[in-house]
Image (cartoon, rainbow, N blue to C red):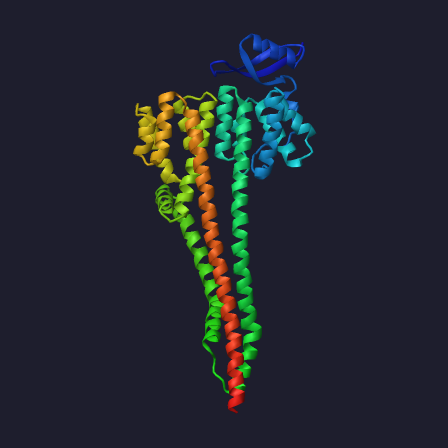
Length: 408
């Protein structure tokens, strides 16, 4: 009988690996179940090294968010619903998938699993495709042998992130279009119509009216001011990137970002939503409090908030109540603290953090819509103002020419 290499997890979450002899993978899986182990991967020991392509597994580009979503949907279908081990699912995808990028990344992931690596460690080789929140969820799923549930949560997380991004893009499209259109109208007037009007007024002895002078000033701003502002913005971004290379610089700049009106609350809500959702999923997967907060901390992008969360985690490990520690370090508002406090008393932190994630996601969506609506209103008002000035300049120029003709 052939030998099979296996990696499995026990009911108490301990990993084990080894070699068993059996007729096929199904037989080995039944043997592991009889031993009280749940298989994570099973592969023939004499063919594991030949079962994948010899292409390099050096990481890098994995195809982006779209590929990640497609991969986790397939893994959830095969592993969560179908009960297939992850390694077998990846092997099947590496051989049968019609998506070239998914096929490649599944092949590399399967190779890593065959060599004894965890799925989370393998995913970390593709940071452009799998972000830290995703890899931490997978790590928790592997430690609790609950990958099916985790895959489902990852799919929901990626879909929510894509929907939020699409909302922002859709909301910004209208004000951007209005600004571009208004600028095009002004430049058209400046370069094509204004010279003709000025020539006619000079020939008739009529002076420039106020709207014409204002249009000249706006034209100068668009021609000279906007490029200068763009260059200054690029220089500021470069300086900021160099400043943020140090830990102190990143910390100070992130704390400053949190104080910017509208932008600061959006950044805060985004991080709170992210770590609350991850904490809820980890608790639901059976991860203990210390490990759940350790993994949740890594999902926080803002270094200032992350430092607060580190202090919060230390306080909780020292025995402080979770709700009191969250309030002490300013991570949640009073209403959220009440939700966590109730969850602590009832032993339902899963629903507590899930509710906070949901409420902050709604607040984040509302803030973004409010901000983009304000930008849209400003852009619309600016477009109308430019058109009004444009129309007044033409009308007053015609009236000026008419008065000059009558006077002569």
